[in-house]
Image (cartoon, rainbow, N blue to C red; front, side, top):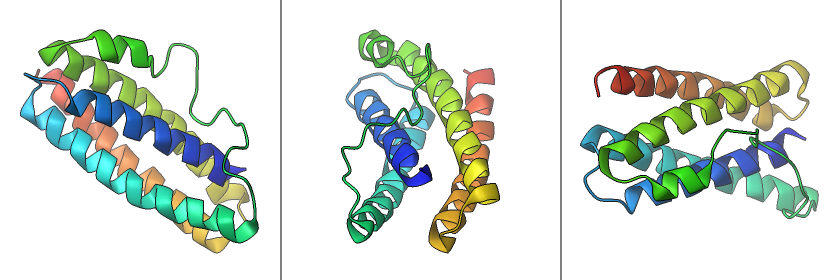
Length: 141
C-alpha cells in the first residue's frame, strides 16, 4: 500500500535530516535543504497518518518503504562529520528520493484514493526538483 510505504520513506528522510541538522560545519545550502525536506515531509507524513487512522490501519504495519540495500545507511551519515556529512546526506537523499518517486509513480498509475494520487503527484514533482537541486550542490561542493 502506497501510504504505508511512503510513511516509512518520509520517516527515514526526516530521520536523515535530523541527523544532519545536529552536525556542525555542514554547508549551509545542505542544511537549508535538510530543513526544507524535514518540514515538507513532516506535513505530508501527518496527512498520511490521518488517512491510516481514518481507514483504521495500524501505523506499525511492517513495510519496506524506501529501504534498499546500500541506500540510506544511517550509520554512515551518523559517523560523517562536517562537509563530508553534507556529501553523504546529499547522495543518500538523492537515492532515497528516487525510490520515493518510483513509489509515487506506481500510485499515480494504480491508485484509487484521489487524495493519495494527488499527494503522489506532488511528491514526484517536488522530489525531482529536490534531486536536481541536490545534484547541483554535489557538483559545486
